[in-house]
Structure formats: structure tokens, C-alpha cells
Amino acid sequence: MKRSRTGRRPGNPDTREAILAAARELFAEKGFDAATMRAIAAAAEVDPALVHHYFGTKEQLFVATMQFPMDPRELIDQVVAGGKDEAGVRLARVFVTIWDSPIGAIGASLVRSAMSNEWTMRLLREFLTTQILRRVQAELKLDTADAPLRASLVASQISGLALMRYIMKLEPLASLPADDVVAAVAPNLQRYITGDLGQDGTARP
Amino acid sequence: MKRSRTGRRPGNPDTREAILAAARELFAEKGFDAATMRAIAAAAEVDPALVHHYFGTKEQLFVATMQFPMDPRELIDQVVAGGKDEAGVRLARVFVTIWDSPIGAIGASLVRSAMSNEWTMRLLREFLTTQILRRVQAELKLDTADAPLRASLVASQISGLALMRYIMKLEPLASLPADDVVAAVAPNLQRYITGDLGQDGTARP
Image (cartoon, rainbow over all chains, first blue to last red):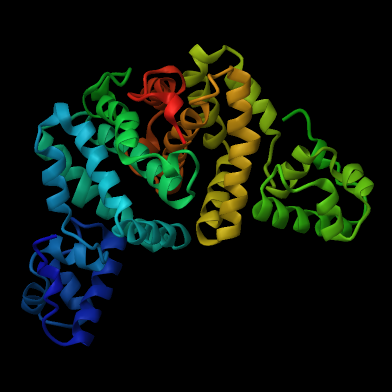
């Protein structure tokens, strides 16, 4: 967490909040790609230049709307650093390290609120898809045909680990030492990333 | 869903509701094993014989408190029918079949409400542990030392699949044909059930 570009918080707090509210609404409604900085600025009734000035890029604005406590790109860099053949164990390690830290409580709270609010759920799904999964796929140079399926399977295992270990606190998984969690889960993640999924990946919808 | 013992609903609706409310509270607070039928009857201010008369066994009472739309024992029978070497694919098949049906919406609603209510979460965890995971372990004759860990890892994958495919509706997993989901997920479940977890299972807390 060395970089903290969104932590600068320049400008008028009301204007910042208006931009964040407009961004949340448009990212959830139209999706990240279709929600332009211009449209967000218009909805917040500010000049587009001000949005860039306050938040930087559209990616940075999205991170700010999620109140995500760190830049996801740093996490992704750690996961992909060893290439795709090591991605399973690195992903497990990075995930467990973050969620075992105080940041885990923020993640748990975000997941919980997404469950009770349809728009927060959409926003979280859009964030997961465009800011995390899509980038990991690109960085790992996964085959494009089945990469989205692989990414969503990885998400199913990781989100279930979050749910059982950190939110529901199901034992013995909740108290299992981090190294043992990584050893147990990493090979399953690796199969989703590079293994045989038992089907013709090119036929995915 | 041939059997429907909890669907009989005999007796006074107010008494039934009082028993269910007391049972929910005690199962969540003390856990399934420690919450006796006698204590539940006392909390509901009814005779213990009436609890048995209305709901049958303590297991049946728990199923009734969860408003679970089917007897979990029937599902467990299907999962364990082929023994532990087939349990991964059978579990994937049973799970996807149930959640692809209208019952899935009930499951999704239960998971969502557990997220916003700590007591519902405890109740769901207790139900999962005592009514599903413990029985599957026993039926599959898993080695007792690491069976609870294996069960909680299975729960992490299954709950994440519920979350991503049915609740968050992450694509392409959300629209993937059931057979492809089973093919993708079953080997990972099977590894959790019978595979090498990369650690000494007897050292689990």
C-alpha cells in the first residue's frame, strides 16, 4: 500500500461525494466500459476535467467508489509475477494474506452489503470483472476463448473461501494456519487457471 | 421430495410458531447438539411431548426452522450413493440440479439473509455443519482426522459456486450449461474429498 493516489482527496468534499455517487450509479447501471467519465461528470453536474483532477483515471475513480483500501493493481502484480504456472499458489497466498489482515474486515463488510443491496452487488460484480479478473486474464496471457470461464471459476473458489473462512467462520477452515489454507486451495485454483476443465473451452457462450 | 414430514403442520399455528422461534434461538445460541428438545420446549412454554408430536425428531425440527424446502437426507443419499470416489461429480450434479430449479431462489434468499443477520448466519452454519457436512462425512466414511477440514473445503467451493453462479450471476459461469459446470467443478470437489491436501491431515486443530 505504498501508493495512495485516491488518498489525496483534493477539492471540495461535497463535489467529491457528488462525483462518487454519480460514478457508483453509472458503473452499476451501465457497467464500467459504457460509463464514460463525461457521463459521470454530467450526472454529478461538474466539469469532466474536475473528475480527472480529483480522481485521475476511470479505473482510479472506480477504486475510490468501492472504498477499496488498496490499489488492486499491486495485488494483481503479485499474483501474476511468477507467470501462469505459479498463479494458483500466488493467488491463494495473496488472498489469504490480505484477508487475514485487518483489510479482511473491510472485504467482509463489502460482501455483506452487496448481499442486501442489488446495486452494490452489481457494482461489486462490475469491479470484480473489469478491475480484477479481466486484468489477471490479460497479465497471465490466458487463451482468450476460455479465459472468462476460468476467471469466473477462480472467483467461485476464492469467494467461497472468503465466505466460509472469514464471514461464516466455518471450522476448521476458519482457524486453519494460512500456509495450510494455501496448500489446500492452491492446486484447485491452478486447475481452474491452466488445467483441463473437462470441456471444449471454445464453445463457451 | 417424496417425503414431506415437516409439511404436515399439525396443531395450533401459534404454538408451532412459538416452538420454531425458540428452536431458532437455541440452535443459533447453543448449537444443534447442546440445544435439547426439552430446553426448546421450555423456552416455548410447551410440553416436550408436543414438540415431538408437531415436529418429530430434533433433526426434523431443525429442517423446519430453516424453512428448508426438502429433506437434506434425500440429497445426501444421492451424493453418497456411489461411494467416496464418485462423490465429487455427484455432489456437483445434485447441487447444480437443485440450484438451477426454483428451489435455488430459496437458497439464494437464505444466504442473503444470513449475510445481514448474525443469528441467521449462525443458524445456517450450524445447519450446514450438523445436518449436511457431518452426515456426508459419516456416510462417505472419510478418515475422521481430516474429515472436518475436507468438508469445510468442499463447503468453500460449493458456497462460492452458489454465490457466483446464482447470486452475483457472474458470467460466463452464470449461463454455463449444467453439464459444463459439473465437468468444471467436480474434479476440484473430488480432490477436497479424497485427494492430497498438501498437509498432514492429522495435525488439524
